[in-house]
Structure formats: C-alpha cells, structure tokens
Image (tube, rainbow, N blue to C red):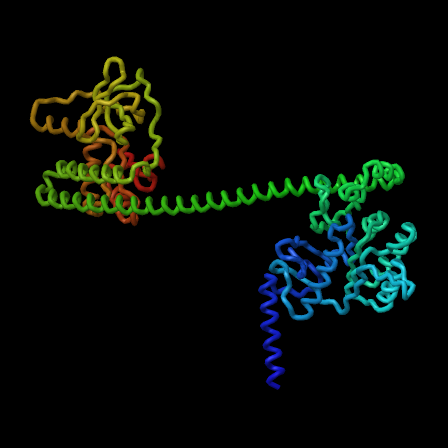
Length: 528
C-alpha cells in the first residue's frame, strides 16, 4: 500500500519536473485543437521552431505540403505527441491558453516499413497500415498519414490518396496528411472541410524555416533543394524541360503566392508594430488629458474657494461700513447714506470682478455711438467700467466724453462707449434758478440722479425706503424709466419691492428687466 502511494507521489513529482524542463503549460480541453507555439518535446529547445496547429473547428482534414526535410512529418508528430501527453495527464510544451481535443483513438502511418522478409515494398507497407486504420477508425479519432499514396505511379497514387481522404472526411475523423501530389492540393482547395497547409521554405536562402502555415499549399522545391545539395545545374535545367507545363505553372503560382505571403507578413508585422505604438501613444495622451482635466478642476476649485473667501471678507467689511453709516446718518441724510451704501456695493462688485477674472459674461448693451446725434444728457454704457453714465460734455472732435457715473465724473473715449438712450427733453430744456439755497440743492439732486440703483443685500424695509427716495429724485430729474437692481437670491427682496411699487402713486407700471440688463435680477420701472 505504501509503495503504491509513494509511486503515485513520485509520478506527480516526475510530471512536474518534466513540465518545468519543457517550460510546459496546462492545456485547455476542448472539442477542437488550437495549439499556439507548440514545440516537439524531443527536439533541442534551443533549436526547435514553435508552430501553430489548428484542426477540428473549421475543418477536420489538414493537408500539409512542402519540400522534403522541411518539417512536414515533425509538425504531424508534434500534434500526435502533444495529444498523447494531454491524455496522459502531462503538461504540454505550448503557449498558455492552447486548446486540444481528446481523441478516442490515435492512428499513425509514419515512416517507411518496407520488408524483404515480408515481401513488403514502400507502397505495400503504407497500404497495409492504411487498410488497418480504415477498418477501425471512428468519428473523433485522430489519424496521421505521412506521404499518403507515395511509392507507386504518381497518377494512381494521387487517385488512391484522394479516395482515402474522402473516406476519412466522411467518417469525420480528425486527419493530418502529408503529400507532394499537386492533385491533392487542388482537392483541398475545392472540398469543404479540407484545408491546405505548408511548411515554409525561403526561396532566397534555399533553406526551410520549419514554420507551419495554414491556408496555403506549398511547393516541393525539388529543383532548389537538389541544387543546394550539389546536383549539376545542367541536369537540373534538363529536368525542367521534362516537367509538364501545367505542373510547372502550378508550382510557379505556389512559389509566387509564398513570396507574396512573406511580404504580406512582413508588412503586417510593421503595421502591427505601428498600431501598438499608436495605442501606446493614445493611452499616454488619454492619461495626460485625464491628469490635465483633474488638475484644471482642482485649480478652478481652489480659485473659486479663494474668490468666494475674498468676496465674503469684502462683503463683511462692507456690511460693517454700512452698519456704521446707518448709525451716523438719520433720515434727513438718506441721500448721503444711499451714496455711501452704493459706494460699498461698488466695492463688493469690484472685489468680485478682481477675484474671478474672465468669469463674468460679456454684456452686449446699447448700440454703436453716432457722434453727430450724441448730445449732453444722453445715457451711455462705458465698457471698461461696465457702468452706465450721463454725458456732461462732448469734446469738439467727438473722440472724448465727460460723463457722470454715480458720484464719479470722468473722461472716457467715445470708442469705448455704447449709446443707450437720449435724455428727456424736460431734463435739460428748463434752466434751473439759483435764486435760493433750496433751488441749488434741487439742481445738485438732478445732476447726480442716475437711471439705475442697486439695492442688493438690503432688507425689504430698507429697500422700500431707498427706492422711494430714488423714485422721487428720478421724477424731479425728469426720468421716465428707471432700473432697480435687486438681485435674484431667494426672491424675497424682489417680491417686497414689487409690492412697494404697486402701492407707489408715482409708478405707472413695472416689469422684469431684459436679459442684457439683469433679467429676473432687476426690475424696469415706468414713472408717471
């Protein structure tokens, strides 16, 4: 009992050692055979040429042609040995993920077993084995036939070989056969379930490469091999004269196909290499794009956080200023307080603009200025300041304008401005009397009134008080339309101001402003 267990353990270790020496892999059992980089287990690993073998998926009969000493028999033996190794529980010398079928029986007719004692010629020896195989072969068996139909008249041998292969194809036995007959190459081309293959031969070096190529037939290259082995060139030339024209043409076509295939493989390898480089570059570009997008997102996030922090700090400081101003001024100083608040709001907007450059959307306000029609009192939009102002004076050439922007009086270029609206006629048609102090105050009010007021950040009560004073001043200045900027926010300030406007006797009607003047964040008011 112990001896049996030790023998089994020894067998497992022997299999593992053998697999390591062969650099073997575990085969995948399948309904068909697809071996990748398969190697003959008995050939020196330094010299063996790996081959790919397919059988049973798209075709069940593989006809291998090519020159002598080219590797046809070795390719066939490789499949037979690897099939036996698999069914013996051994790893096989092939690439990972190689597939191989499990065959019920494996039959082989390989080598010349002629015998004088048994009165067997080469042909007789082959036929004796083939008869035995045909009597026992079944579906899903593996049959290996070397030089089928050889050793007799070529025409008769080719005919017999075709009949035998048809029988094996009908039985559906997996079959590999080697041959030199051109008729069998044609048979493989024209018969479903049969595929041509060849062992590669380098016509330039006149040396076989031992690679198995599935899909194309091979030429025997008897003349080239004979010349390499030293046969007189005159004899070779004379032999070519005896060769039938159709056979010579067939061999020439096969030779040309082989040359074109080698060129195609070389170009295909170059294309594959370039494709791999392109995929590598695309992957690198994709990684760089993702990295840039990630960095961009982080930079924008940090910039927004910094901008928001700056705005919050500026707003806090402005609110402190506003609170201080509220304590300093009583109701009689509403106008001064309003101006101070407006200055604080302007400071906030300036901070927002500086903290987020390039984020504010470009506005398209008014239309191009016509210098001939522009007059003092007209309302214009100053693009560098992003503000509207009133024209106080026009330089003689019309290139420069003196404008009033809130409490600020400045000189700007007319090319940097856009025309918004003409001044109401009554605004400048009646001269203002300077007879007393009250009329002087009224003139100052009229000269400083603008078309819009910003009440963002105020409470509803404060906004009503400021808007009431603003509407009164606007009527005194002769304005027919004004703009109240209340912002969007939660909408509470807008709702409160709208309720106030409905109750105000000086208001004729009001609507939300156009999109270029603030949309739902501002209200355009028409005065009576």
